[in-house]
Image 1 (cartoon, one colour):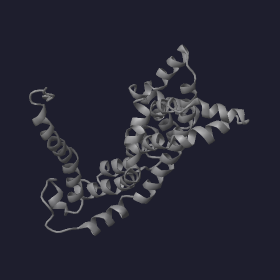
Image 2 (cartoon, helix red, strand yellow):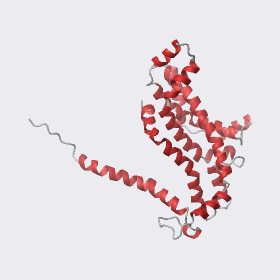
Image 3 (cartoon, one colour):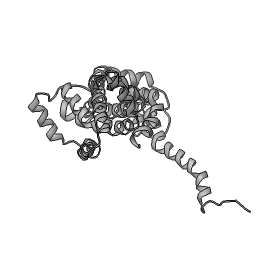
Image 4 (cartoon, helix red, strand yellow):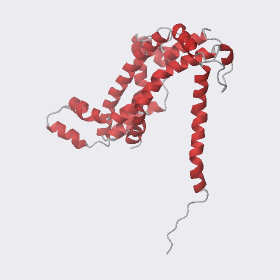
Length: 282
């Protein structure tokens, strides 16, 4: 008796073509823009007027990057970005994890409604005018504290979305055993729940760091002109004409601005897929 099976028509060839298509998509969508950015950043001003795939006739890496570092106020803007990003990411991870723990452990109709409201920020953008007016009323407009609060509110939904699903997979017996031993809610969270959230929090950290580090839109309205961040500083110096037609300097600035996030991604890349699969889709 024959046990041979046949695959659907055309399914076999597609399996062979699919890796090639995926590789070409990566090269076109990621490789080419990255190549153009890096290559243009080491060209002369004349060669960089029309960014293209042609390699530079002579490399000006040291000159271009030194000029950007000196004239682009990168050190001050870097510390401004760090001043905003680190507290915002740490705060949203902490409070988002706490909220996720409560939402994951309580099952009721109202709790489901509250969870839907908590993750609605994933699809509903914040109103800029309302944010600015609220910060002015609170006396936080133009301050780092106001910008940190804005970012925490914007990305709280992201943390809750990732973490709530993961906490639901953690056996509740672990918490019950800790309570039997006399542990209160705070101790249970910090000693039982939080250490188990490593992969999911690593994923959320990388994503939120990327969002905050590259943001120029909300920073422009909240702290524009009163606190330098790297993307906001690049926008300002380019608009002021400092880098007018100096595409080699603009691309060099972009490369320098991207290096910290590239480093964070390299360190935490192994956690991204495990965090997404263990949390968000469960």
